View 1 (tube, rainbow, N blue to C red):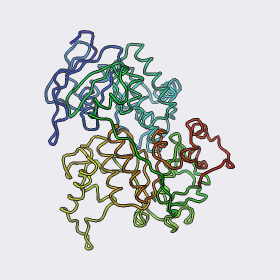
View 2: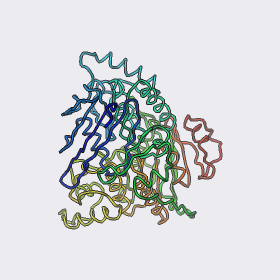
View 3: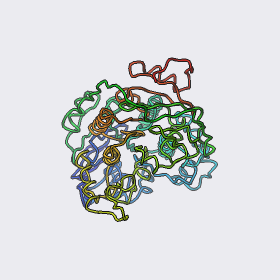
Length: 506
């Protein structure tokens, strides 16, 4: 391998009980290079990055950094070498503030006040707005992503590893991040970049290594490829096009009427006179910049927040504003949260046991759990949604992010809901799995279900939805049909620039 390489991996392997995650992987990253690692969910990308960062130890192989053979035993040693990582699944303590979380990974000779000052400087320079004093549990998923990125940048890394860094960032924030990354590279930093957004890899990266089933299957210059050719290299085919047939919508399933709620914490968003309707046989989307009331609305709709006026939320004609999740689930409401681990699934429980969070088919009238029925139910979801897992007894945290997402979405769709609410349905999911999830949502809509999708991916909303709303500052815009919606109009509405008299499709 070239002596100029900043990082060299030679025949790295890592086996888990149910899977060979990395199989004799060799690659090199040059100084001042943005190097993409491309592969479908479960291809071994995140495991390989954790090995480089010292969070996971390889079973065999060697790592050279700046020409020297190194044994990276933990992330602290990695940071001392100049390696920083932004994880796909956040490593933040909910009860601590932003500044306290960042402080944990920095030189303890710095005071907390100095760390807070540096966070503000970096956030302002990079356009990643953050308030250092905010507790992490009050942040949206997009804001948590910003904390991880700022924490990594404050380490002044020589090698920066980014695992799905833009999955919950707005297009404007993505452009600002790309400008930052290009500046870092100009200063000599190298970047390992994992993303399922092929257009990002083609726009940003100068080299690409493709993984499939834990092995290196090819390398290329992504700037010379198309989305189709990269998809072919990654999954062996192009994902099927989404078929979205016109369908006459049916009866109203969800009605939100003049919903107003004060925020629960000082950093949240007040909901103000929110109006929303979702009918049978339609997908309604909600766009908006993270932190504009989406989390508060989802809590109110799912039943996690029962402070709403009883008649402000109606499900199938029944007032449910003060009812909890179990009562709403009995009426046919199922919910896929954006936080897969912790809210969508219990990390240490098996996939079979995670079914019990929202499903009760395997529970007898006397309260006993029929484990064979539960395992069969989990296996059916694994097979139908092509989830790569070691069977129904595999623990949730052992799955890649995309495969866990497929299982959670499958769990809720398989319940035959009357209303399905999905937040960030394809966050961190490869192109093949994203197409599969979107097709499943459209099929559910075609079967007569009412579907509400909250997403920061405008392309996803345009592809999926019959109607689109925008949330800004706790207010809900009128709805636009898919034909009326444009990127320019949605973008202006994200700043709250709409009038209540604008024509809406109800």
